[in-house]
Length: 196
Image (cartoon, rainbow, N blue to C red; front, side, top):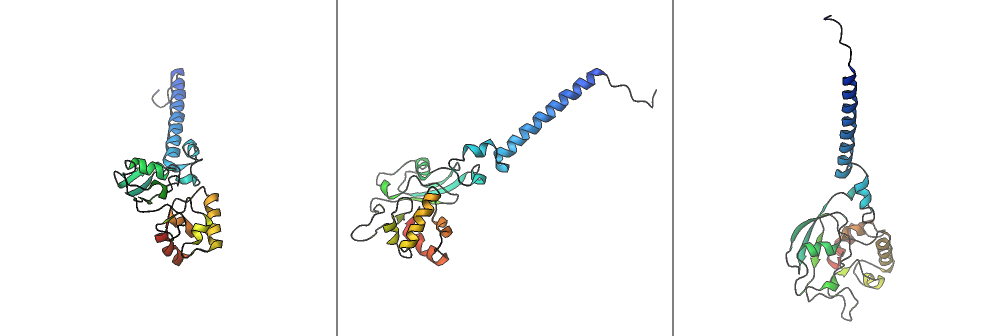
């Protein structure tokens, strides 16, 4: 009869189950894709958890400018959680005159950071008799070295060391803004005297 629906044969029930299984598979693949693109905190974020204190940033790349005594200075994209040593390696490694001891190779990179590899005339962060001749490395400086920087006293120097230890290092001068006792005017002074 033209007005009545035809009975559903067994074959279409089987097809319905197949379609349902395909739909579930597509949903699972879509959920994994969303997690891997930063929309969630799934397995991709977990794999970087040891290297990143910010879980939301763990799936994004960082873009850094590598300058100074490297073979190929330039702007490079690196995976989140990368260190200064990775950026130097990406830029072709140290040039012949690079002062490798004057830069903290273990510092974690942050997006937009400039990594400057000093040349042979720059001393490592140390208290030389004639005073500091180059920027102090935040990654390796002692309380005494930081205390010698204009705008930082012994109390603030100790707070910087404690902040560095709690956060697994400092990858940017801008992080000092989070240290109690360092305000915007002090930050401008510190940019010239410090390096990550």
